[in-house]
Length: 212
Ligand SMILES: [Zn+2]
Image 1 (cartoon, rainbow, N blue to C red):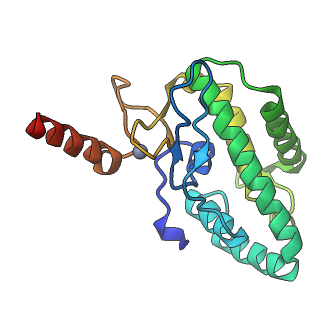
Image 2: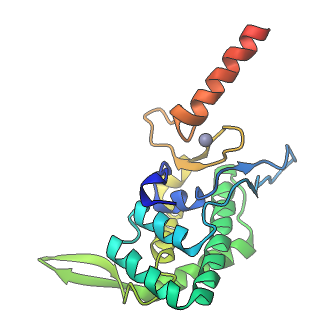
């Protein structure tokens, strides 16, 4: 996918990462936990898609993305295994945020995946001093193929441990299930995008009214 076509509506990098699927369909109205985790279309089928998304979301610069693409071309097997790890991490984050939204205790297995990603990212985290200010940065950002995942892990930890967690919502649209931070003034945002899922719901309500 080209860098410009990614739709970033999550409000946080980690939520936009969770939203790198066409949508998720609920397994039905089971009682208790329902992770609605049937992914409709994976938007990260190739390693280059991960780079493109990371660049769109600001997790990678253009230069970093190009350098990582060259590395991936030189070692496609390593790139494929990073991509598989990214998809596992995405599924884990989805379940953790869904737990948070539903006030459920997150499952230990998915928490372990997050912890692993956090320790990988943490080992790469650096603080640089430049032009009179400290900036958070990464160690050798273009040498590791999993570079795009580090800021995602950091973003997830920051959001999960913040008061904003209570504002994480899931789009109510059919076949959507995207997650976003509801920063609307009265915390009433229902849709990932009013022009998209919100509009479809409006049309459906209108049709139901006309039929009835
Ligand atoms: Zn939606």
